[in-house]
Length: 312
Image (cartoon, rainbow, N blue to C red; front, side):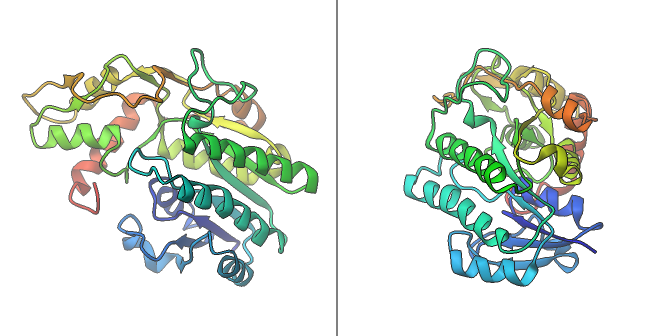
């Protein structure tokens, strides 16, 4: 069985990827010592867990050397939440951590390395984001993620290595924590409280996590088509926060209606955060399989069964 290494394996994206690949790969999951592993605790007997901080170059090199993975997925990050404001830590995890991982993996032949990018690299846009758009990130997180996306592309092209970046657009689904839109809405509705939200008209290109996992699988299978490239992974359709609330309400009996304008919108956010997915679809044949309604139905079902787990 081929070996796969996943960094940030206990996070929302990472944990879903662990579950997606653990039946077909020998999955090696990397987590930090202080990480809450609630998302993967029930599958720890089916994966190999390694406690290592990617900012520790020497220890990381030793762990990677012992694993010798054929496939690498890099999701470890810091700075994606408003509470994560320490710029030096953002730089250390995103920049030094990514460089450390690439340097460690370069010591051994691998089939494909997928770096996880973000819509925050684009900054505010008034039209669907395209991979050839100028990058205008307006947060420290977006700035340094953009830098590492470009660094990965540079290394891939200069050293002829199978490294690609998938820019994930407004991911949602099972295993999200509090503070994320759908979890907050479902938590409020499950307790018959009114969700407190910002603008109902803010638009997102919500992309269901299972479609994202399948995008990673396709990218890993086609390194000849993905190496050195940057791709948006997006459902490609616009839905407002109000749309999300209305769709979620179908799955929770409640009497309260949302309170809009109560929560101040994050200042760096744009009112439209949708991405063009044509490049990835055309290059690899990937297509999102879940409609917005189906993704929310599955998320609501998971939430009802797991509301008391971990941070959800």
